[in-house]
Length: 109
Image 1 (spheres, rainbow, N blue to C red):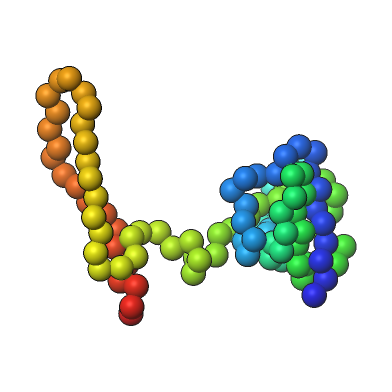
Image 2 (spheres, rainbow, N blue to C red):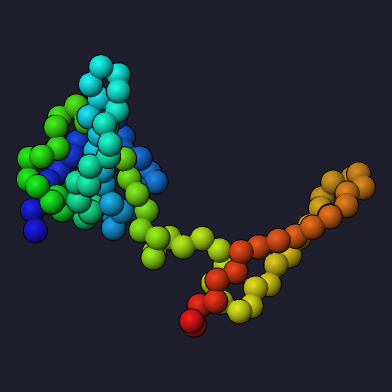
């Protein structure tokens, strides 16, 4: 395990989470390169992240950093077999609800 701290000029993204994958891209002549896997986030600080890097020192200083969420952890949709919702309309005017839909993922399969 090789931990490397990546510091940003301003506050890092609040959307980044521990366990997210980190990729970097170079920007030469205003053309972005293909994203290259850097490692996994191990720590988040106000203006930096700590990454378990694949190749130590491989991330250039002026790189564009992107994050990828782990699909196993951040699965979209409701988990389980039962959901209870309450919808209220506090408007003084008439309103009609035409459809309700959701994405449900069975949690025990």
